[in-house]
Image 1 (cartoon, rainbow, N blue to C red):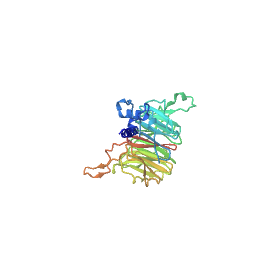
Image 2 (cartoon, rainbow, N blue to C red; image 1 turned 60 degrees about the horizontal axis):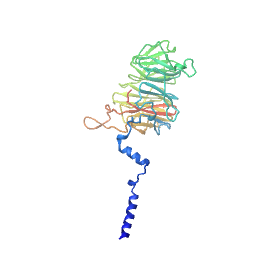
Image 3 (cartoon, helix red, strand yellow; image 1 turned 120 degrees about the vertical axis):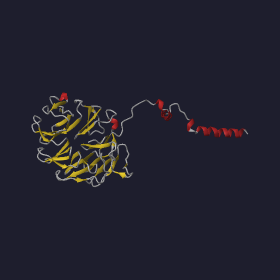
Image 4 (tube, rainbow, N blue to C red; image 1 turned 90 degrees about the vertical axis):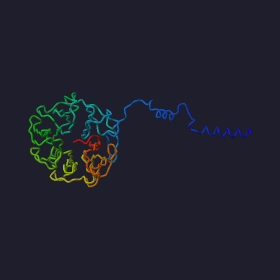
Length: 364
């Protein structure tokens, strides 16, 4: 009988000693971690880390890295601007700058008028401007006024509601406002209105041809901005214009299809061909950019890339909220009408060999 008791005791001791639930070393990290997770009231009240706000790609848009954690503040940016080697970020009414060749951006505060909401990269330098018409130029590090960082320019321009500041290769300055487009050939001493059919937002130049986005669509000039013609006008506004290899790419609103259309021109902006057949029609397509041999498009369904000038598109990143909306009309039928689509969309920017995707409302 004693032998049976000892045998039973031996098996009980072995069984209990192998149960991990009865192992409690006083300093076990796993045990401590589990205790904190299991009791939310002991977790410190900290703000969630920023995520899916700014993405970065260094391989032509094939793969993307989320660099949102490095933002100076855990808030949605109010503006993002990309030059050849620098990128600017405006958040909480403060302008920040970083080099774009870093592994991840290092944001430094810019000592510019806090009313400045936009940045323009021009041949004579970087400029900051605001809706009220003030324009500032960033001083070089070796200039006599470099200690001031930014100096006001174009004091003779008295218009407000400014949309863009653009400088051509020969030094001609264009200021786009809600009242039209203004031109100066004497470094801002005098101004002439050259377009009066609504606002002008963005402009690009290639081989003596100027293309811009306007209130009626896409406009073009071949005489250094003296005269303009609408080359795409379909009842809606111009959204984006870009210089690409061999021509231009544009996004504009089409009133008939109630969607934004993407087109390219390979004859200096004379004629335009739609390249969005492979994309879901949408009212919220944000941008079109070129990086190397690829066109990159910001779309509510995600980020798309084309290697054949838009004949075909492939998805390279999911949408901002990783969701695709399905629209149904009043008859219960699937519809392409996304006028109530409130999803955010990635807007695409290129700085050198780096592509950025910034989440936000589609806007103009």
